[in-house]
Image 1 (cartoon, rainbow over the protein chains, first blue to last red):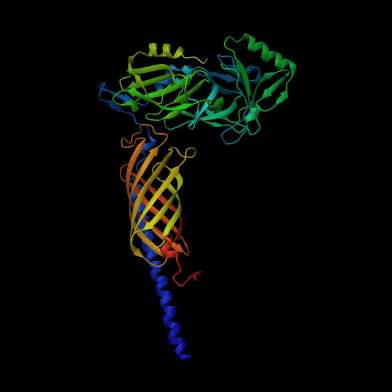
Image 2 (image 1 turned 90 degrees about the vertical axis):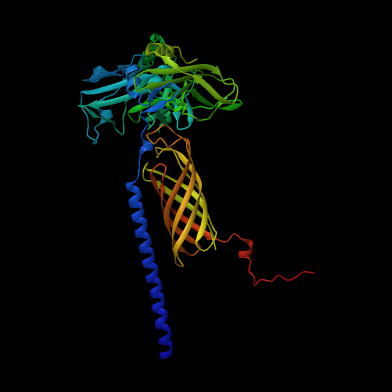
Length: 363
Length: 154
């Protein structure tokens, strides 16, 4: 017995000692790691999240800024803003003829409370390439290109407080589109760190449609509507000069709305990139417009992307100096070969550039 | 010395980005190891969409049977997919990034949990990498049981 005890006791002590050593070791290491983490957090910089505000071009001898939002907002078409005092003020009609219907039952306050009249609506139709560029709203969902039927912005507020859509909302947008022929889906947009709107497919695909034989047709099915509403819609279509098509949207969120679908092209593709001929090409904003699909890409500096051979595109480059001088360039071309497309830029005026943007149209 | 295949997650404190990746630890001696690794930070919930691939060297001055503390030096190649010119003038679409740091690994059986703190000297960004490593022997020599003698057929 005494022999057994003399063996067991040291063995137990050894295990305890080993465990204690491990605990001390781990505690020391963990404390060291925490101290290290604390010190590197102090030295952290979020500079990559903030766009550069000044970029010097040694060739042109000017300093560019990437802060174009204020200027572009000033040049872009303005939202229609209307105070709604009763349902008699409905619909709110945009300059292109899109019509919006909303009642207080469709809305809730930021904290979920009910809403009463009056409230204020801000509504914008972004239907042309010029407006898509000026509103920095390319038709991209991440890296995926969208074929677009049109973009819209919708905001509703009461006494300066932004409102939200109620869970069950009948807010209805009869959206005019300048392109025809496609079945579109509903996308929602958020402005990213680079200032461009990025789109994500909305939750309710079937909430897009256009009038058809005695019914409203969605992208998946049809549902009945009364003859008077249908007649009204048809008459209005006939009266609209630019009308190509119309879509019924029941949005699930306010903000940026897009009627698009994911795009893909048939045929052989080549990898291309765009290079602005400047001492600091990354100072320029480059957009690539595809008239046949009403698609607008923003092309970041150095990025390669595939396009089909024979596709007609319009490339637009824009740079703004800190002294508010503008440098622009453009190229209308058919995609033929793989490689880099070079864009010459020169000093121009706001009027000339906006007049040029007006020449770009969907085909 | 066992090699280790690890599944890792990372968090970038400076840009509040997170992602996942893989690493493979190849021991060089009882205290040194090289660790090739790749990690991806997807778009969507991250503001910055990017991928890293690189090599780290681990040096373990303190180790016990089940745990080790190590210092590390790493070089990562980075591609920033949604690049835009930022206030960080050293960042571009393609980057080479030196990262010193330290880590702690706690083993249990054939698996080990690890956690590392790394600092990107060039961009002044700090990361925590953490994950699970599966340890094993890849060398044929090591796996062979010397006690097992196969009978000769002829």
